[in-house]
Every structure is written in C-alpha cells, then in structure tokens.
Image (cartoon, rainbow, N blue to C red; front, side, top):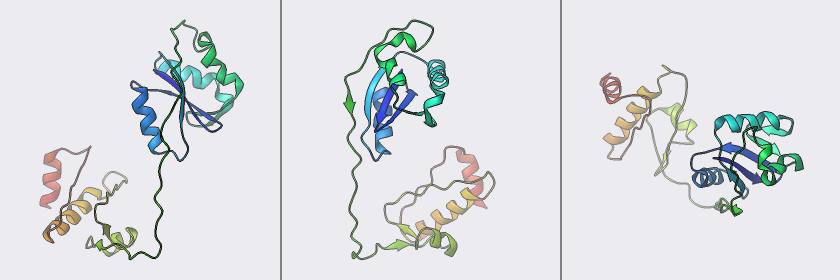
Length: 180
C-alpha cells in the first residue's frame, strides 16, 4: 500500500504492507502528531515513481513539502501512476502524540553497574543503568561481539542478568567468540 502521512508542513510518501503498523512505528519516533491522509494500492515501483514526480518538493528522504500539487493525488488518484488503480482515502487518523517525561534534576542519580571497562563506563555516563538497553554498532571485525560478551560475563559473575542478542551471528559463532 502507498500511504501519505502528514507532519506539520511535511508529507511522507511511503510504502508499507501494513499501513496502520507503519504509522504507529513512525509516530513512536516523532515529536509531532502524524496524520494519515490517504492510502491506496501500490508497490515500491509506484512509491519510487511518486518520489521522482515530486522530487522538486523533497525535503529529506521520503518527506516532501506539503504543496497543493502534491496533495492533488489524494483527490485524483489517476495522477499517481500511468496505470489506473483503485483508490480509496482512509478516514483521517491521528496517531497519539509522543509523551515526554519531566526529569527531576535534583533527584538522586541512578545507580550504575560497571562494565569493567573504564572507557566504556565513561561513554555510558558511569556504567549501565538498570533495565536499560544498549545498541552497539561499528565496522565488522571491530570487536563489538567480543567486548559485549566479556561485559555480559562480568555482569553475570556479579549476580546480574545480561542478554546478548545478535541478528548477524549464529550460535556457533557466538560460542567460538565466548571461548576466547
């Protein structure tokens, strides 16, 4: 499905199999309310054609200036592609705004758990915060997995729980790295 999403004076032209789930995901990372303007059948080729057609309005990535020319595709679906497609406009939906928590600057600092690596603890602001998640990225072979497995072992030896999750290594690779 092709969808048009509005955020203030910007329109996102996107593609998603599940538009409602995509809007929910995008709203999670947006400080402003997002409004679903329309959705209609289409594929990635249709999305790419729309991006090319409105390139002169592009702000960044898939986001475009909310120009009347762009908004005409909501009312005239035949302008979307050269192939006629069935079009339907969804009821305008506004995803719930992102909520923010007010921090108390006078509150006692949270306890932090050392990683056993002074430099890593420094980068983390003094160590791990209980219940937090850490995403570490970098070039292949930089030592991310080895470092994090050593940290997980150190934390576990002190009676805390640690989870090492990877999407790019199989169990054998993790086991080999742990043994070194």
